[in-house]
Image 1 (cartoon, rainbow, N blue to C red):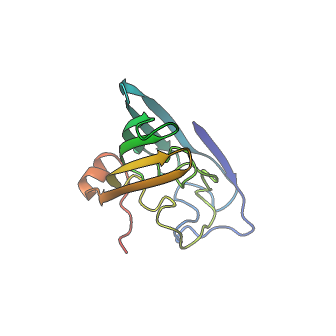
Image 2: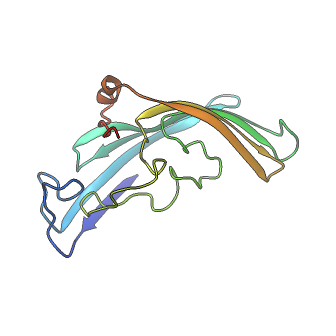
Image 3: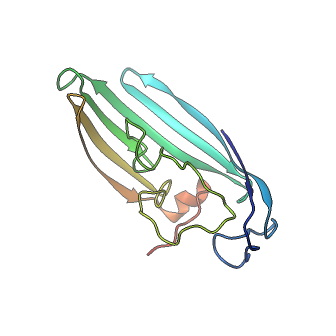
Length: 170
């Protein structure tokens, strides 16, 4: 997956403000390869699969481990039209079987150079890649969906090894 972007803002960006022009780039009118991602996914054994995404950022000039998960899933366990699954992953909502939660919904990305919102919902990429957790989920009769899980912050040392920058602690 390649995400190329061109960013023009009405006023030049101040390189000393977080979220604005980045060292090594112009204060405005930046054409950049934001992300280049490779994916590996597939069945490991019956009902068990894995998904891994590795991403290179031209802005950060680094390669990092991105969305990653292992999953057990089976259907019709609780009757026709049901799904049951257990997921081990590093991004809450990546396991969503409908691809409607933050990990997969539009907009998929935004400019690295333009100013963005100062606040947001934590699930909107606030902890992606910085946690590891497990969830169990079930869909009953093609209508009722339930999920339960928990996540734990990954250590600064591990995050550094996989080139995932530390998040500010609040």
